[in-house]
Image 1: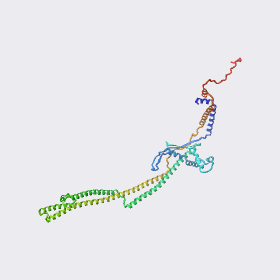
Image 2: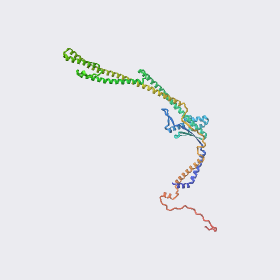
Image 3: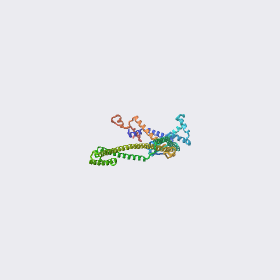
Image 4: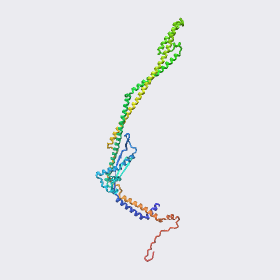
Length: 467
C-alpha cells in the first residue's frame, strides 16, 4: 500500500480516524490532569582520579577511571547510604516514619520478619527515586532525586551527597586502619628479624673471636702474600741454578775444577778453589824437583783431592740450601695463603651479617614509617571527593506540560486511528480503483461504468410544460 492509498483509506474511513484522535486527546488530557508534577534536583561531586600505590605508598594517576567511578556510583546508590539519608531526614524532622508505615503495610503485609524492616523498606523507596550517573571524562558523579516538592528534592539530593561522602570517608578510614594494623603486625615481625640478625652477628663475633676488621689489615696480608710469592719464585730460580751448577761440577773432571765457574755466593767453594790453585802449583813444583814418590808430593796430592772434594761438597750444600729455602718459603706461603683465605671468609661472613642487620633495620624503619603514615591517614578527615555544586530547588518541573501531553495523546490517537482504518480496509476488501480489479481477477478490463448519478427534475414553465 502506497502513500496515496493510505490517504484514500483515511478519507474514506475518516470517522474512525477522527474518533480515535478524539479519544487520544481525551486520554492525554486525563493523563495530564492525573499525572503528578515532579521536580528533579541534581548535585555534582568531583572524584579525584589519583590513587595511592598499596605497596610503595606513592601517589600515581588512576588507570581505570571508568571502573573506579562505577564503584563510586554503586556506593552512592547503596542501601547503607540510603539508610544514612533516611535517618538524617527523620532526625531533622523532614520525614516522618509514619509517612511510610501505611504503604509498607499495604505492600509487605506489615510483618516484622528478617528483611522486612520498615526502615530498610523506606530506604529502598528513596533509592527508587534516586538516579546516579558517572562521567569518566570529567571524573564526576551526578546524583539526582525526583520528588513532588522541589525543596524536598533538593534536600534529599544534598542528603545523599553528604551521606555518600561520609560513607567514602568511613571506608577510607577503615581501609587505612586495617592497613595500619597489618603494618603493625609486620613491624613486630621485622623487629624480631632485626633482633635475630643482631644476635647472629654477636654470636659470630664471640665464636670467631674477632672485632670488626678494616680494609688495611686485609690489604697488608695480601701485600705480604704477594711479596712472599715473589720471594718464592726467586728462591725456586736460585734452586734451579744451584742444582744445575752442582750437576755440572759433578760432571766436570777433577783436574778442571780449578777453572770451574763458581758463583760469588758460594764462598766456601771459592776459598777451596783458591787453595786448590795453590796446592796444584805446589804439587807441580814438587813433582818437577823431587818426583811423584816424594813424601811431600803424596801429601800435596791428598790435599789437592781433599780440596776438589770440598768444592763439590760446597756446590752440593749450596743446592741443598736452595732446596730447603724453597721448601721453607712454600710452607710459609701456604700458611699465609690459608690465613688470608680464612680472613677473607671471616670478613665476608661478617660483612654478610652486617648487611643483614643493616637491611633488616632499614626495612624495619621503612615499615614503621609507613605504619605511622597509614595510622595518621586513618585519623585524618580528608577524602578525594569535592562537592562541585549543591542541589537547589528546581523552578521547572521534570514532568511534561499539559499541552504537550494532550498533543502527544492526539498524535497517538491519530496514528492508532490510521492503523485501525487500514486494518478495516484490508479486512473488508472493497474495490476502490481499476488497478485493484486487474490485480484481483488477473484479466483485462472489458468496460468501465461510471458511477450512477440521479438526474435533476426539470422545472415546469409558467404554462405547465416541462422545460
